[in-house]
Length: 163
Image (cartoon, rainbow, N blue to C red; front, side):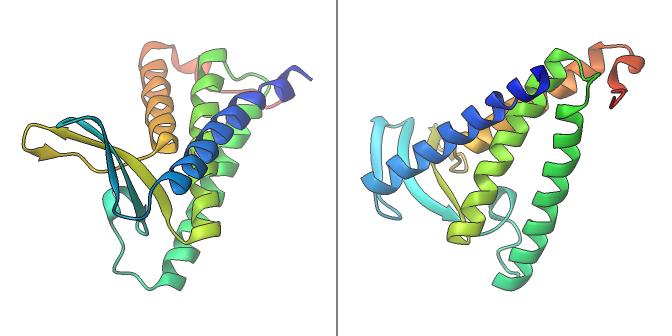
């Protein structure tokens, strides 16, 4: 029962991601930008049809759909199994919940729109960072936390019993 309560974490991440995307889709059209902090942070609606940083956009739509679908399913099953395993330490479960919620948010985008909705847009001087979304942020934070946890904890703690 307690493990099932943990499902609230990825569900909340998913709701935040999908809610933010619905909000931005109602606010802007593709390519439109709204300054939040002029010269630094903008809301700019874009659609990423590729993978990270727009890679693999050269693939045909069907190939991308199959590739991203299989990769997404593999990630959800792999991280989901670790997330729900009985012996998973709390911080690992938090990290995995962030990753799962974000992966599901971007996966739903790909299924519904054929692309991921991106809108968080930052400039650092003359450097323009790639536009991203809340799901990407949750995935990154979860991956960093998980990596730090693995570096800091004894190896035996990373072996969930699965019982």
